[in-house]
Amino acid sequence: MSIENLEVEPAESEVILGDRLPLAREFTRNLATHGEELGLIGPLELPRLWSRHVLNSALVAPLLRPGLVGDIGSGAGLPGLVLGIARPDVDFVLIEPMERRVAWLKDQVSELGLKNVTVIRARAEEVSLPDPLDQVTARAVSAFRKLLPWTAPLLRNGGELVLMKGINAEAEVAAATKEIRRFKVSDIRVDVLGEGITPEVTRVVRGFVRAS
Image 1: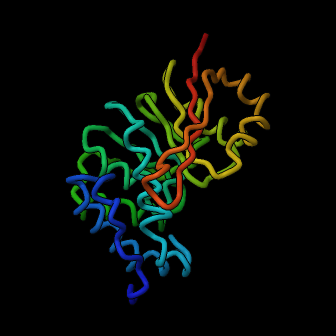
Image 2: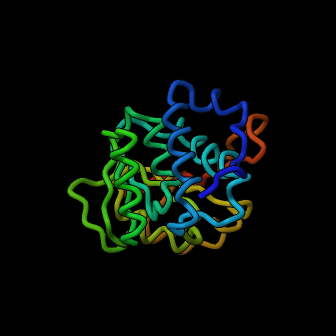
């Protein structure tokens, strides 16, 4: 597939990704080459692949801490593979139910040499992990109130939600009062990342899940 319409790499990529930029370039080129035919990205995404998807995902990297981070519904690897590239000091488990996407994720983990990334084929609500997660992320999966039953139970006591949301993030939180109480989520806030750095900001809903 021709990738002549691939967005020119933005100047801010080096600021955000540092010495991990060469790997991010390789992943972005792979996604641009195979993404549409594999149903990972739409035909209109190439002209904004860096700014809307790759850098949008990479902005979350500083919020993560060394430990085990789960990415729910990893799909094309946004944000899971991008975060795995950006944070080699963090262990990631990418959870994706679709076989075709799982194959893509595993191929990329192998090709990019990401020793810190594991891929599991499963639905989030059915996955069985040997260890609870320290943090969990997701991007463009579902409304916050629907995400909570899939993500909160996977976290250890005191684990953190780091969920990428759109412009209506605050409204989604407000609509999830019952689920927030049910899953004992506290200290919820919406962080806006990338202001003054990237053309498009990233909104992240954060909160801690506590058993008591």
